[in-house]
Image 1 (cartoon, rainbow, N blue to C red):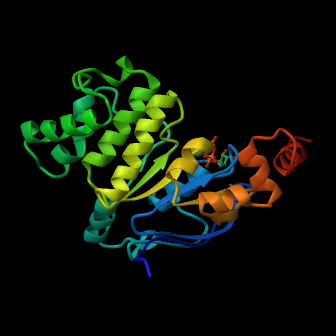
Image 2: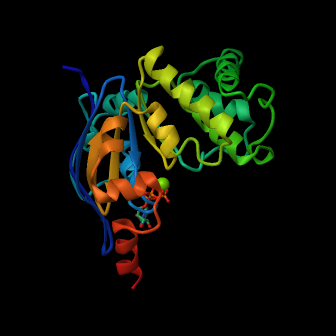
Length: 259
Ligand SMILES: Nc1ncnc2c1ncn2[C@@H]1O[C@H](COP(=O)(O)OP(=O)(O)OP(=O)(O)O)[C@@H](O)[C@H]1O
Ligand SMILES: [Mg+2]
């Protein structure tokens, strides 16, 4: 039996009257690439933020490699959690007033006390993995959207956590860069033994990288399976989503809400 990396149990979360999560349960295993898909606004980012401890759910339980995320008490526990899991924001969330290399090396310098030279070497290495050599001294405002996104990924890798949550790492990237990032995620699993949770809208990319895919819709996970199982699914929600059809249960729910 594979080791459990992330266990989410009966997670519920509302913002005011809006029920975003109505009871979400799933397990991500060690060294798995687990892709979460679903229509815009179904709560994928909120789900990752809850796993990362950035948003508190109303109820439920989350453990990450045995760490009880919702009850981090002592400072050592908080520190252990921070070293175990990193969240790459959908927006990148870079520090605009620092150059690229410092954004990537920030954690190593500010938290780990590494000397600037050593930290910069590490930052250079991860930037080169993401095709960003030569951008070290630029500022985030001087980068394209896709480049900012890749800097955020380099920053997460630099922290060397066991588990990385990626919020739409390939949105805004061209097809070649998407393929490179996909390959990098598989490399993280195969060569660096990482566990990756990836939120994605890109069906082709999801099928390429996922060990398993979860489809989130209307506050629940409607299906979890291997890419083959998801492709063969007879669930009308899953079918509409992966085939990108304009008519179906997803559209009906949106119309009900708007109407
Ligand atoms: N901090 C917040 N306060 C209030 N409502 C929020 C907050 N964060 C998210 N929401 C709401 O929760 C719902 C889910 O948002 P979320 O960002 O998780 O969607 P998503 O699935 O990531 O969408 P997208 O694919 O567009 O990124 C949305 O209706 C959003 O308005
Ligand atoms: Mg989102």
